[in-house]
Amino acid sequence: MSSKNTPLSTPVPSSDAPAASASLLPPYFLALGTFAIGTEGFMIAPLLPTIARDLGMSLSATATLVVVFTLVMSLSSPMTTVMTASLRRRSTLLVAMALFTLGNLVAAFSSSFATLMIARILMAIASGLYVPCANSLAGVIVPTEKRGRALAIVSGGMTIAIALGLPLGALVGHTFGWRSTFLAVAVMGLVAILGILSGVHRGAGSQIAVASLSQRVGIIRQRPVLRLLGITLFWSIGAYTAYPYVAPYLTEVLGFGPAGIGATVSMWGIAAAVGVTVGGRLNDSFGSNRVVLWSLVLLGASFATLALATQLSPRAALVPVLAAIAVSGLSVWSFFPAQMARLIAAGAVSQASVALALNTSTMYLGFSIGSAMGAGVIGTGTVWGIGAIAAISEGISIWLDRKHIRLR
Image (cartoon, rainbow, N blue to C red; front, top):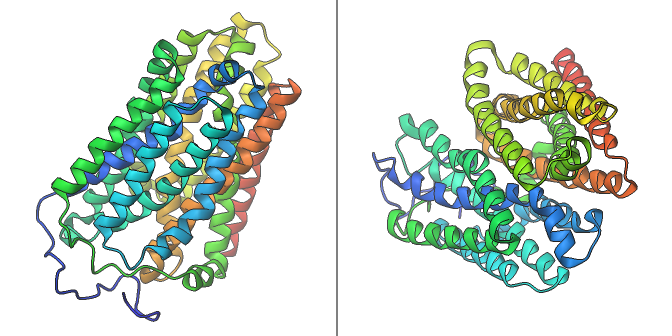
């Protein structure tokens, strides 16, 4: 390991560290893991009503599966990353993916809510360890000029999961039962393990310096970074106040059954994948600040539309609701690459990786808060409230964003 004062971007020489490979194949193997994690993380939302009925629980109580997952992931990720700093990076990835696969197997054969919750906690810890490790490794196992493409490939695993894995999981769950989706993801996890074993060098990433907890805290104290993290927090609160409860919303407002919910979730996933890609390109063309602002404005407007549409008849609400869901998928993820670009530029280059890791933890903390708020709203039977609270959260994010720009 490097000493505490080693810059985070400076490689630490190691006798068994392989030279950077000109091939982009290893990042693709890493993306197998992010695809599995992304599929599991997003697929559960449309399945919540089915799980609730099967376990004989209320929807708001079942939604704690989302709340606890996102909270554990946000809190555990910085700690597990530091705790495993002395391990080989490939070994860390294998441990994380094995734990993730085990969690899915436990969920697939669970007979009680308590067992299912334990399984999701295992998955959260594993996900919080795998994703930052895979991203940091992708950045050093290829030449510098290919680093951007390598990171895009690993992140692309999550994007493909949103576009394909999410609707596929919903389709499998509604057709064969919700437990089958966890079994399918467990198979994805096993494929990722085999991919890492065969496609990633044993000594890969031994030159990576892992930031300590004190270094992370030091970066949070920087006001520009702290303001940006605040924007991420309220963006993610709004996103997850609404998204996990799309199934009960569609059932109550539009009278949709499993087929309609699955098709709508598929549409959202495709829009989200487009949003990630378009957001990155717009960031390069128009600048991060404009992309962030318009993404938040469109997202807030789409959530407000969802709230207002609850006052319409199912026929009158159909087009506004579907349009709002498509726009929310597009704008919620067009925000992300632009926000990451601003975080990279906010501090020293050597601190960029830690700032991005903190952004991920903040995002999942917001997901946890938002999903808890949404569960409370759903529990009262006022489905319009999830759109209203989500819109207010995005409004706060816009206010923080404008304040950040003025103080620069």
